[in-house]
Structures are given as structure tokens and as C-alpha cells.
View 1 (cartoon, rainbow, N blue to C red):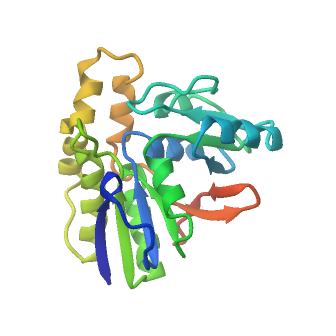
View 2: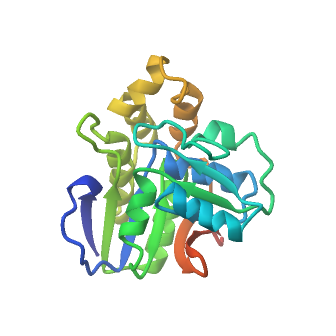
View 3: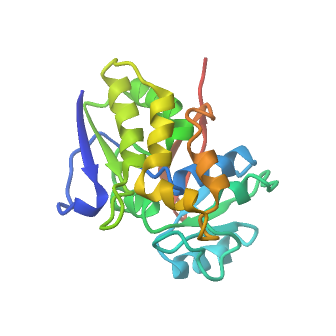
Length: 234
């Protein structure tokens, strides 16, 4: 198996021949998505813009809209910002979610044509790893999305390290990975506590390695991309 590490903000080539792509966003898109599924969400629809979300809401009027602008501030007009702490308080049983964020969702859209596509964060990294092993792709790309001009993105690199190590049969130190989330440039902004859009509770939830035992595969549906839960079969 060949493993490719790709930073979204450095990606210049549109075409690719990966058999599987894992889009990683620990702080916070795909942690929020995982907590939404744990709260009962039936499916999650990633969309690129607020306008697309509005159009999709006409087709899915009972959907919860969750979104954030670059830097993490809530998307105007959406029900919730990109916050796992807020999402986990809800009863979303059977309810769809429309998700629009500046990093993780954009990676899914960029690689929408991949034969296998996953959304991942540390809270479901182990299940994602096992799903990848079961699929046995020859060429897998790990797409990190958190690196920006003012952010090292190490929270996502930590998740990519987890997946790469697991695919290569190497040991994984979950405690060290959780520390890297907290010590990352973006993680320290949550710890600083001076931005209400970046609550410490979100950081705590995002740093919980393997909290959930499901992967989040993304496929093409009637209304664009759709993310669903893939529970592990034991």
C-alpha cells in the first residue's frame, strides 16, 4: 500500500489516481460531524457555500444547518456554528445535517470523485483505520486541512500520523496524539479562552482519541455528497 500525505492548502494538481482518500479535520469539522452522528443524525450533507446550504435546505426542510467561516466563527444564518460541544447537546435522532466549513468540507468537495472517500478526525480514527484496512486500497491519500499561514495544522497531522502508522503496522500513542491537538497552534487558541467562537469544551471533545467506533464514509447521493455512519462489524 502506498500512503500519500497531502496538505490541502498546498494542493495544486487537480487530477489524482488515489484508490482511497481520507479528509482530516480534527478542529473541528469532522469531530463535529462525529458528535452529530452520536446525537442521532441520520446523514450529513457537506456543501461548499451558504448559498448551496440554503438551496439544499429547501429540499431537506428538517435539516440542521451547521457551519463556520475561516477562523472558526459561526456561519451567519446557520442554526449552529461548527461546535461539537453544542451539537452533542441536541437530540438529532433521524434528522439530517447540512455542514459547510472552510477546511474539512472543502477537502471532501475537492476529492469528491475518489473511489472511496472518508471524513476523519481523532475521535473516530481507529474505526477509519480499520475501514481502510478492510478496503485494502493500493494508493491512499491522507489530506490534512488545518495548515494555514498562521496555523501549523499539527492537530490534523497527528491524525494522519495515527492512520499512517496503523496502516504500516506500527504502534500508536493515543495520549501523545491528544497532547498534540492541545499544543497545536489552533488548539492553543481554544486554551487562551479569549474567543467565544473557540470554546475550551470543543478542544476537550476533539482531543478524545477513538471516542467513537464508527467511520464516516462519504458517497455521492441525490443531493451531492452525503456522509453516513459505517459501524464496525465485529
